[in-house]
Image (cartoon, rainbow, N blue to C red; front, side):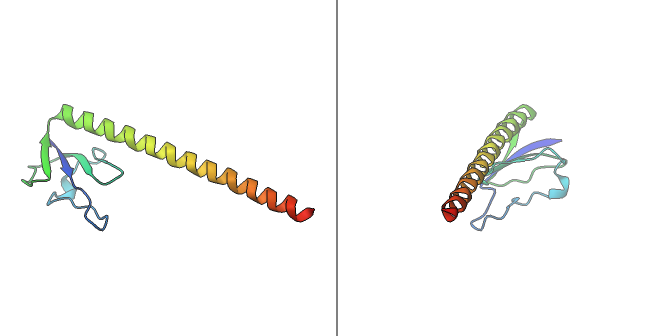
Length: 104
């Protein structure tokens, strides 16, 4: 098994660009994608093709990169959930203000 990293993972339209990697050879559950599309790390059951945007990693490097990406994505998810909670609270306050204002 080999480990790799693709940079410039998304194209200008936001679509994934696997740079000639056979997605069927990516080990399920091994991949991690940065939320901004800048990179993707993975384990691979084959030889990793040569490409300027692909680098081969050691297992330790892959684990470190994957953990960092997973942690960053988790923090992003918490931020989004907090924004949703804040907006729901603001909406409830606005509705209450309209109801109270309409009763007077």
